[in-house]
Length: 75
Image 1 (cartoon, helix red, strand yellow):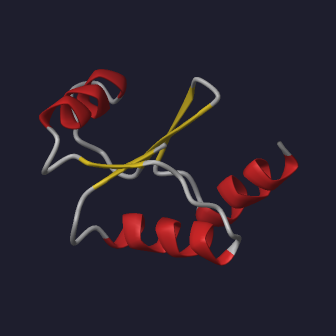
Image 2 (cartoon, rainbow, N blue to C red; image 1 turned 90 degrees about the horizontal axis):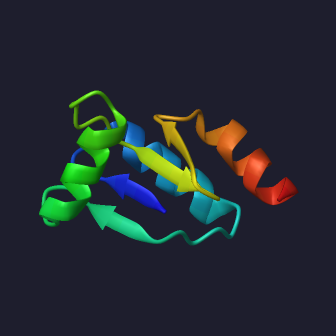
């Protein structure tokens, strides 16, 4: 699951890398979904840092796209 927001360059790069690898995660726009924004703040010390990614219950804040793709392809 990827928590993101429009106009976020880091989010765009991550989503492009996932798409190129054929990975289609669930997406939650923190500007459109108050519950998503609340979750992101709860795992980032009150900050709305995106992209925030949840994989198998583990939270990754602004992970490097290449490392996340490699991790997901190994899983």
